[in-house]
Amino acid sequence: MSRRLWQRPLILAVASVALATGTACAAQASPSATAATTRVVLADQSSHCGKGGEGGEGGEGGRGGEPGRPGEPGKPGTSCLRFGALPDKPASKLTVIDKVRIVMAVESGQAKKAEVAKKYKVSEKEIDTWVKQFRDGDWAALMGVNFLFGS
Image (cartoon, rainbow, N blue to C red; front, side, top):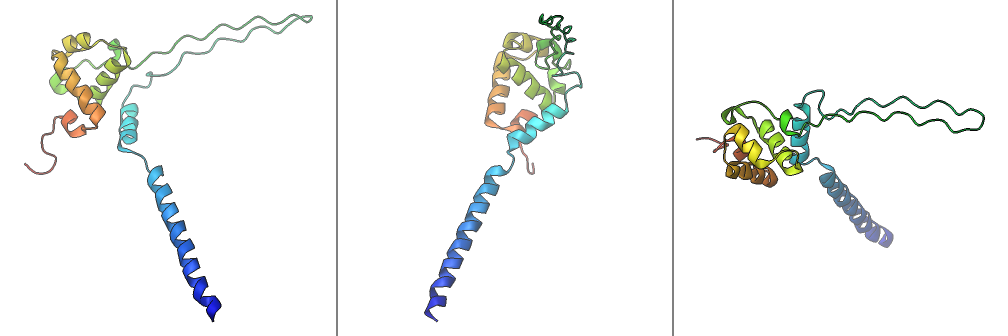
């Protein structure tokens, strides 16, 4: 009888530790809001964006113990973050995805803040606001929504 008294608490303790460990691992493995937003941004891009160039043809095989000639290198792909790839819309028609692409282009150095401000006829301070909202994850503000729930 005394053997059963100590087995039950031990089994309950092991089960509790296993449950806590499983819950902690599941919480760490869940995708974040930023990852979901990144997938949305990537899904909205054109099919040619981010696609690398075609690789070159390989060199000829070696003859008589000589090494073969190297192949021709591939052409570089087009970047979706360069200034010319940004959307051609007035600032009032920009979607949150457009603003994220603009922020990423400015932050990566592919576009200058002054050029972007001139193209969309907004101040550089407005671009700084978009960057801050993006970094803070303030998607409602980036969408231009003042109140998410109600009026």
